[in-house]
Amino acid sequence: MERVTGIGGIFFRARDPGELAAWYERHLGVSKVPKTYDDDPWWQDEGPTVFAPLPADTEYFGRPEQTWLINFRVSNMDAMVAQLRDAGIAVEVDPTEYPNGRFARLCDPEGNPIQLWQPKVTDETDDGKGVLP
Figure 1 (cartoon, rainbow, N blue to C red):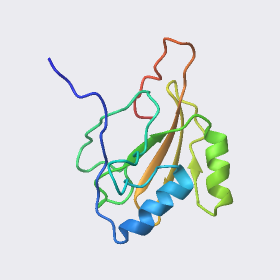
Figure 2 (cartoon, rainbow, N blue to C red):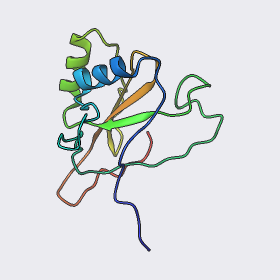
Figure 3 (tube, rainbow, N blue to C red):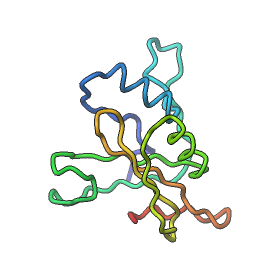
Figure 4 (spheres, rainbow, N blue to C red):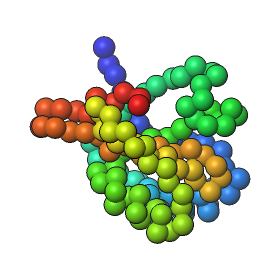
């Protein structure tokens, strides 16, 4: 069976798309959409990705009207959290270290939930096993 090879884009509505794109670039390093085909888009590092439809009544996203949550992989949770907090962004670090790694939560300026995940990789064959905490 042919299968997709990864996430090609994430598209969502925003009250101020330009400012929100700038916030993601400034604080999380997610490059804005290129203005020409000669410019490169944001490139992800290869790694595990979880695709998880959840029940309509889940509390996992926070607000009941919120229909999505984006999870970004990070290589150094402590450094990323310090960087965000230094910029005045509230970040809640989950104190539990799960078998698949560490997690933290924050919101973008429009209140969209963001989860950070530092996968736990114990050796070259361990892929982090991307299950929900």
